[in-house]
Length: 213
Length: 213
Image (cartoon, each protein chain N blue to C red):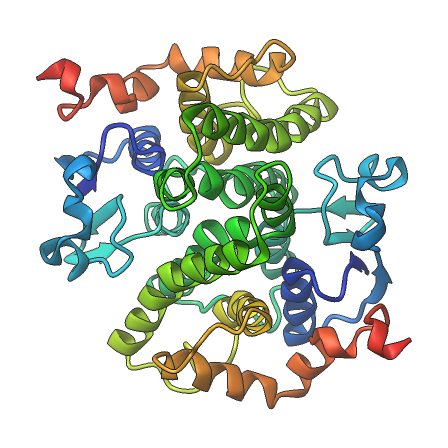
């Protein structure tokens, strides 16, 4: 299996965590978003969305991170990311899809670029935008975790929700988001980052991170 | 089962289509987004995200439309929305999640409101924003449908993808988006709108649509 991704792309980071938690070996193929490699013909002929990550497996290219993760969990049922009980699966998806559908897109690079040009906003305005949408979704995620009485992970071990949460928290910290009123999210973050699977998947550990070159 | 929603909310429309296609009877409970009813204590105590749709079933409240739809398909396996073959399930999710994760949030009411205030953009600038993101995701969705040689529906009958596509197309038409170069999407739209399930789910048929009052 080959994962075409970018070290700091949060959707690529989701896939790296998913593959690590499932114990699936893969080759990492860096795609340079800074030179818009994902918009070149060589890449878009394989992925019309022109986005990372692209997962190459069984001779097929698969894209769109949430569809990839759902597929991985069905095609490789060992070490499932989603729990087995239908109600628990719903809970994991509620929190993961809140982040993936409400929060991810407004914070993603194409939207941030559009705010700068053509809309002409300053970095301060963009930073406020970023933190506004983070709070709007992470506040209720934290409230839900409190209601559920969550411990170190949403369930007994990290899975579907943590795959989506950790990359978003990583991004939020780059924008100096204040987690002081989010003890559940911070506890889950800490517990995940202590695990070798999350350490290997982390942007800091990727070969295309300039600090490793 | 009770569906708390708003006639023009595209995520509420998704759920109405899903319930109709699965043949699950439900009571529709309108939530007035224009008076911010979804942000009131009576509603947020049941849904900390303060969003519609809320699905009341088996004595539980469930939220976040994609998690609700995945749950419905697992808890009520008759008339499945997702195909049975794992690879086909991936294809349906790739296209549905492209719309749900990339496209929905930047076009959703909270983001459009923020562009107006505090960011101070004109309606023309907001309309351009809207059409920009529509094209960015619907162009590759159309390309994928062409690659797949899609007919009236993605598979033999409407399901997971059409549940997400139709509400987005409905919204796009309100913003005068040009579908001239999207024959596959237009053909699927036409085939769906000819079915009684989609007609019953349509915003025009809802009791909280002012034209019905």
